[in-house]
Length: 182
Image 1: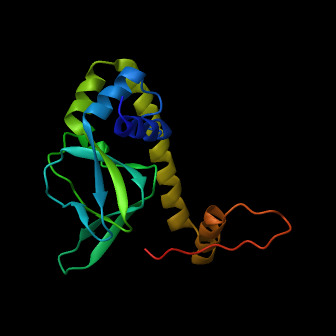
Image 2: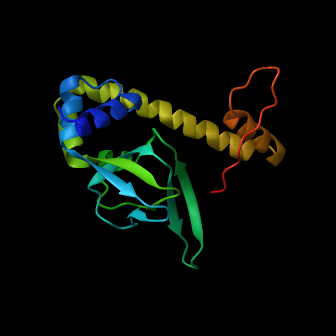
């Protein structure tokens, strides 16, 4: 197995979506994937393009967004390192991406062939059930995020964000961190 394949397999194992796949399944996913390097601001795919891949962020951050009829950009999601995006489209037989995707920073993603991954799932009901559980976990996380955004005051949301993104520190030291601008 080459260095590229091992890098992809290691990254896949760290993701909830792929963590329970067998070695044979991981090897198949790896064979039907590609590494894509994207510069800051560069589009990965545009709204309306045919769905061919879903993605795992190896490094950097991706922005999923739509553009309103009056030209305003509406951010749908910021996808950090280690997260998967556009995977649900393969289960919905969605022919085209419903959003645009661009890199917020220099980013590296693994593009996973959506048709081949879906075909692999047809071969294993057990794997489908494991993935269903993992996707349900992600859905619960997003529902919690919606609750946090809509049911709490702005002050509570800022405090929650700071607590979630604060680096670990010793009790005797002052905690400092950089806030990123999206």
